[in-house]
Image (cartoon, rainbow, N blue to C red; front, side, top):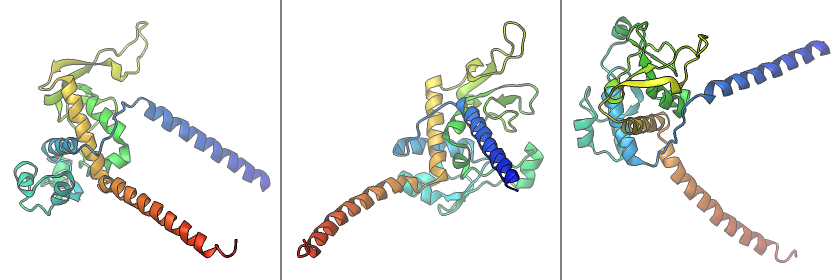
Amino acid sequence: MLGHKRVHQAAFTLLMLVSATASAAGGAHLLHMDVDLGNEASLQRGAKTFVNYCLSCHSASYMRYNRMGKDLGISDDVLKANFMFGTDKVGDTMTVSMDSEDSLKFFGVSPPDLSVIARARGADWLYSYFKTFYLDENRPFGVNNLTFKDVGMPHVLWELQGVQRLAHVESEDGAHHTPTYADLELITPGTQTEKEYDQTIRDLVNFMVYLGEPIKLKRGKIGVWVLLYLFVFMIIAYMLKKEYWRDVH
């Protein structure tokens, strides 16, 4: 019995080590971006990109327009004029009019809700994903993605970024070459320069990170006040302790 237990423990340890190694290897290739939730202008630009390019198919049903407006410094009038296209009430959630059955018919899959996609995938994954679409005639929408192989959606930002292709698919000796981000080559420029598109994606990912956990905007400020309170309380508690123990010592 003891022997079986040791075998199970060893197998579990080995499995955990393999899993950790695989996770590290899988995430090592991702492009990195620094999330800046303190940049209100970036969040506002990201929100505008999100509602214009993502919200037509994907919903963000955990977020209400007026909550987003309050957090990002956007007035109700500006929300109605620039961010709300499928509803008349600022208190509505960010949903889409497309029925799930229609989306299955059009795309073969129902587009997922993006409320917590940044928490599920991570900022680096999203940043890499939006930058690594490339031409692939074998895919239904004519594009593939190095970050999400055989992706089932079109490159909705292609007008901004332009069109990319894989420059190298075989090594010099004719052997198969595993594509990397360095193999992507822009063949048709978009309406934005590479630097402008990069900033657009950073803004969009910033907003999606906020979308997954809106309280992050306030949690840092609350934390400062909590630490300040604890510091003041520590001083008072120390002085009270000295007063109580004065006669003892």
